[in-house]
Length: 464
DNA sequence: TGAAATGTTGGGGCG
DNA sequence: ACGCCCCAACATTTC
Image (cartoon, protein in one colour):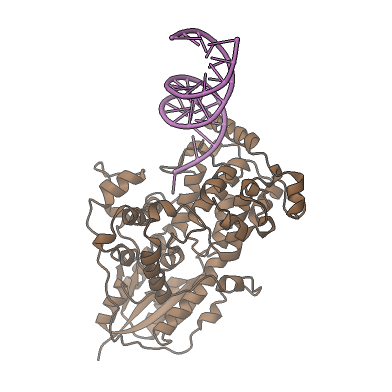
């Protein structure tokens, strides 16, 4: 007769390559739980994903998942006490709030004679292990990745799914639906058609990407109408797949230029978590403090136009509408819409951060914070502030055939490529022929690119 | 993982 | 043949 141990699912909603679950299953019968902690801030689209992911997880363990909501520490202690459990397993999270919480939980449980066992299941390299020779953290990606990560221990090899886990149940618990992760307004139903959720879906998506998307990745990943990006980010966020599984899925012959480039994107994910770990203010505070004096403007109407995809710049609007419709934006287009918000509308990156947080199915504190700071120019190893994307040129360059823009801005679909990214320059007759009335069916540009670019550059001069 | 301004070069038209 | 201008094409600098 083995003891019952508790396994606490968090951002690791999978059975394969799950070090905590693997160990737990070797130590006794497993009580698998999920707690929706009331201190966690989760965006609406991400809640939708979580709702579905928990259902998939529950199905994969024959409905043994026990679900709770409230204060993690209190709940854990209560479960352990009322079920005579004296050992708890979980995989670590690396966000500041979690780190702080976990420390307290560990202390609380230990002082109640309950053992705690935690593992790394979500990072290839733990942030505290990668430091410069002067034992301070890296602040630039390339040396972090090349000299730090790649010269350090090779990533842990993925574990198989534990066999024959003995699950135990308790009575009187919530079901996944009781967590109320879905909004009562069914706005999220539109997302259903775009995503398959859960561990199996993540594995399939990786497999498809390796066979159909990886070849030519380095160059083709910049084109939003091509299928050369993995779209694994939401699966990674909830740990339906581990970075280790992705890392080791590239066999030696796949590690060419394209493969290296793809793996380095995992490196950027590591870098974001690394920065967040060493600089816990990253989500809120400019990494480069000189940006604290930047003369941001805030115009509610301009911001709304950006959110709704009504800026009058087709590639920007396509991106913002992709976000609203699908919960996702292609990475190239993320940079374009973000640059437009921060450098043409001169709106603080916090506003963009918050909108993305609510709308993205892959909303992730580390990646979202680091990436907005990158675009704004305020981050570590960020894009220089004066690098300002021109949405016309970016559209012409990266959506050459216009397929992406036409898909999300259908009111312009009959416009020839020549004018697709600058419809206000099209001859009157052509616009009429295409039934496009600018200012009603599609907006005129809400700001002038040249003018706002000048203001942005002059503002930057002020803070230098 | 920029874009615009400025500088340089070289071919062709022309007197 | 030569100088001059124009300007596209490319390179470099600047923001």
